[in-house]
Amino acid sequence: MTATDPALTALAQGWCALSLLHGKIEAHIERALQSGHGLSVREYSLLDVLSRQHDGEGGHLQMKQVADAVVLSQSATTRLVTRLEDRGLLERYLCPTDRRGIYTNVTDAGLKLLEEARPTNDAALREALDEALTHPELAPLVKVVESGTVPA
Image (cartoon, rainbow, N blue to C red; front, side, top):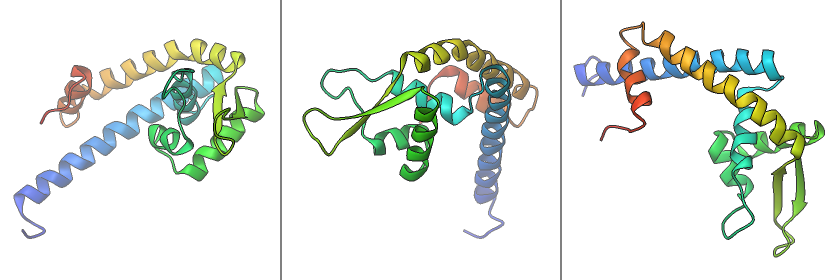
């Protein structure tokens, strides 16, 4: 394959379209969450991921799993957890069965803020997707997102 190979060109165009769609969605949601709730997209995502934990088997996530879920490095995730902990939205405590492990839970205040922010997040996502549908290069990707399935 050469750099001008049509398959490579199509691949690069597809990647650019996907990156553009992601950027547009994230920026739109970021503005809505910041103005309405004082949350960034990453903070909202972290609260959302951690709110789904439970006390049963496999119910708590290790920091690496949290980092993977919010698509950040472990050190960036730790800084994000610290910021939210300082705001009283998260709390950390030692794992009762493994003193080396530290769990992070969403506080009642964090759950309340998440509950208030969820409709804003969902509406902003819908708005961003609707706007992206007006762009022919993004419309097929929006359809994939809306279908909830990834083509093989």
